[in-house]
Image: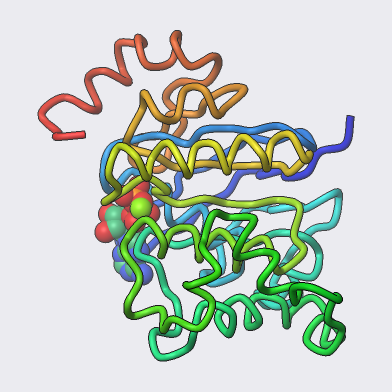
Length: 244
Ligand SMILES: Nc1ncnc2c1ncn2[C@@H]1O[C@H](COP(=O)(O)OP(=O)(O)O)[C@@H](O)[C@H]1O
Ligand SMILES: [Mg+2]
């Protein structure tokens, strides 16, 4: 089976702090993996290094067998990896459709020009993630947190990437919105996307993943099926005292 993502001996230091401490893991194509750990464990820093937003101190990240080295983010997206942000980052003054169009651009300039007979590609994507037709022209600044997360997903999917890194997808959502985003993620799994999902909401995460990796201070402390990992003593200890 092809490895979508391979992380080898990854280290990232910020001055005296080691945020990623010799991390090793890989994800087979089409798998969905959870990445959990207390605040400050280094989850987002892993995403930033995979995307080339932060350059690793040492170690290697490969995507479908290609060493990403020091490639810029735009090239990594073209090679097939994209991410969402813990705090959604739309262009607030742009409309929903325009925001999705920005996501389409790294893939191909033609995607901006070629439009289907009924809906543009952007509109189709907006509908696919559960946004309404009445949202198309709305500025992103007017969206609820649930709709902002849907827009984040649409922008990420729009890049054409098949490996999606989803950071804290359920943060700030109502129970109803969590259910909607969960079902969207299930659709992505069914379509064969490879997913790496960070979530503090462990009950919401469980049905979405094949296995889970728990990290603390940049190191893997447990990996395997969800129940074994969350019941692992070191994982329980690392979450102690933290509102999750
Ligand atoms: N750009 C940065 N500069 C300095 N320290 C950082 C930077 N980004 C993250 N860190 C530190 O790295 C550690 C891991 O952070 P982060 O990856 O955001 O954790 P998580 O996403 O698991 O909550 C934290 O101690 C954080 O303060
Ligand atoms: Mg984070």
